[in-house]
Image (tube, rainbow over all chains, first blue to last red; front, top):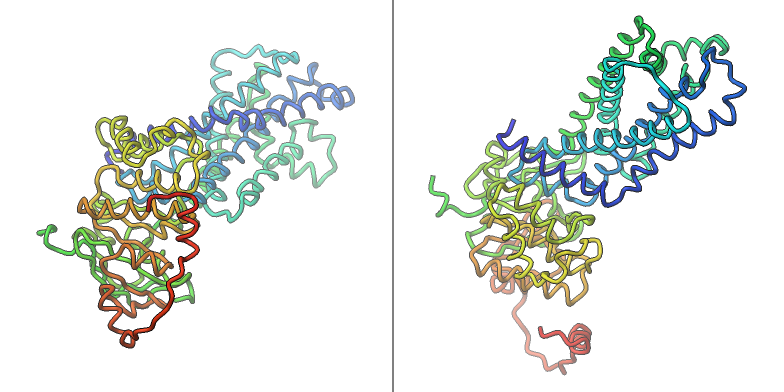
Amino acid sequence: MSKHFFGDTTVLLGRSLRHITRSPDTIITTAIMPIAMMLMFVYVFGGAIRTGSDSYVNYMLPGILLITVASGIAYTAYRLFMDMKGGIFERFQSMPTARSSVLWAHVLTSLVANLISLGVVMLVALLMGFRSGAGVLAWLSVAGILLLFTVALTWIAVIPGLSAKTMEGASAFSYPLIFLPFLSSAFVPTASMPGPVRAFAENQPVTSIVNAIRALFAGQPVGTDIWVALAWCVGILVVAYAFAMRTYRRKIS
Amino acid sequence: MTTQQAPAIQVNGLEKSYKELRVLRGVTFEVARGSIFALLGSNGAGKTTAVKILSTLLKADAGTARVNGFDVATQAADVRESISLTGQFAAVDEILSGRENLVLVARLRHLKNPGKIADDLLERFSLTDAGGRKAATYSGGMRRRLDIAMSLIGDPPIIFLDEPTTGLDPQARIEVWQAVKELADRGTTVLLTTQYLDEAEQLADRIAILHEGRIIVNGTLAELKQLLPPAKVEYVEKQPTLEDIFLTLVGTKA
């Protein structure tokens, strides 16, 4: 690791954050879709969905938070793609700068941007009547799971960001990730689904993550869900990181 | 190792293929310190590939290259301390202002007083008035000037300019030429690639023609001229070129 790694990463992080503050629309668009879904599910479909929980906002917020991250990382890929296409990525790589800083600055920017979006969505949820009796430890656990989930998805986003040929290609990968919560316990209990769908829903990562966050918010015991959730997040993170680094080395040798 | 006397760039038998496509098939040349060297070739001749290898962005399949005395494969970090790359597309950050772009590069090169460096360069490249504006609002020529200014930060002894005037209008082209000449006057070694014959003729001390992955000719303009049939004397009425007309009408000093 270069002796300038932290300094260079800080400088480049400052640059990317300036991009965000100068075009806050990326954060607003990221937050608007999950908010719209939340409004629709709570005030349109929610009345017809039997979840066994007394507040539907409380029930579906964890899924909405995951959708927020999934749509937020599309911008991570987009920002990286723009740097690749504009040649500024190559400029940085040909300078006496710690090379990996360029990538890490994008990863950290993704964390900050998603954190802000999550905050906005959370605020709207509170206005819509979301309430939680969770203690400090439970809140910290929720924050930790969301952070880990964001990091894992960010490294997935790095792969198309580095390798895409077009802007659409760079962000299209996020659509299935946004869709995944619908095939989980995020909006309806999995028990209502037909056999094969239910089998998929109960064994895909989103369900365990949603269940863990939901239990933490409700102040209930999380059981094994949290360990399954953490295992999924770490697993995705490790695989995505390995593939992202391979793509990176193929681009810059 | 006396890097001072060695040529600024030494390239020997460089080869590079992309799958089946052999882009470089044994490229050999040297660039003397403080000179302007033009790598001339049509699109797809391998110019950009050669520049990318020399600026440590790509690895060669075979052959060696030394830049400022350092091997590009084994001493990449030292090479990066010695060079600046101005790529084919003006690589400026459009969302940042011109001044912020310069400060960013100065900080990434770990220099003291990034603000002062930025202000000095803005002045030298006549961008002081535009310094606070987003680079996205710049004209093509201004972007290129900012791009070159960013490359000069830290006074690297060797600068690579990959097709610096492609896509520029005639006025902007002359501005860039001026900037390149000034660089050489200050002792910087410049390796530039171009597909324009007049650009090589205007700027370069030596010209090498890269064709189908090999250097087919390498020499000064006078030497290259001798390769052709001897000059014939013909009497032709010298009409102004369209470029002369254009530049006179729009009132450029050059």
